Image 1: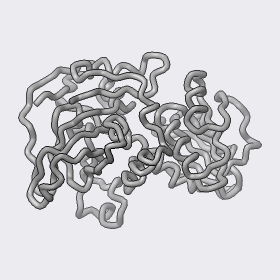
Image 2 (image 1 turned 120 degrees about the vertical axis):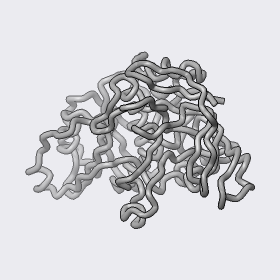
Image 3 (image 1 turned 180 degrees about the vertical axis):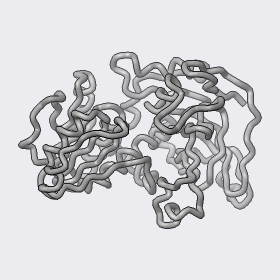
Image 4 (image 1 turned 90 degrees about the vertical axis):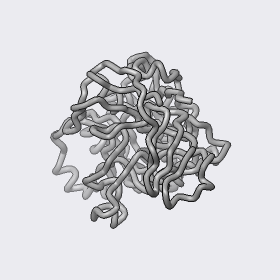
Length: 332
């Protein structure tokens, strides 16, 4: 099979590799579409994200969909031919985190496209059968792949406790911020304010659930929203967003920012705010697929660029093109 391999920062080579065999409990998926994530581009350019360092050739890509073409021992043969959205995680079933249901926090997690685990920019991948989620024919291959970033938005909205009548402020109108806005709308939020410095992205936000948009630096201290979700990672955005939350409200940090930052701890204490974070997701795929199938979430609308497999390197650099929201690589 073909595999697009990161061999050095900024350098992708197409290699021929053996097709993997599904082990017990696994399925073999022929990959159809793979979305490009900001973490992919960071590994591509810099060879690391924090403590995760690319030390040997690596296949990137974790937003993936495809069709099951073979199954391992213990998996029903009837699954062959299913179109699936891949939840790109392999937690250790024996870890305390997995056993209590927080499998996404498993310390021995093997996550697609995260060193040293290969990802989905290739023709075939294997994954645990329970992490290959069937999708109906009404859901496109691209949308099936983008259930991964949608799951991040779902996890953020769940952590924020957003429901009918809620008011929320979201910093950042990249793919995660836009999807978070869509999920908040689907959950019944009545006021969704999205902040971003890019006018094109602010315009996109209005098409993806925002009721109001603003530029960074706007004074939101009088908003008194129920929840603030940061999808930017910018220190100034986090600090400003916290001041906009009502007493007993919630702050959820999703964007990847610096390792440490200074926060208004006295305000957090005096308002008794709940401050938490999101690291990946768990138990989100069935909901994500149902929301897309119902039409309440539009993933296809987010795709602004498509690339054939041979142009993976170009796809990984496409976020530098103005107006880009989400690029997708068509594998098969």
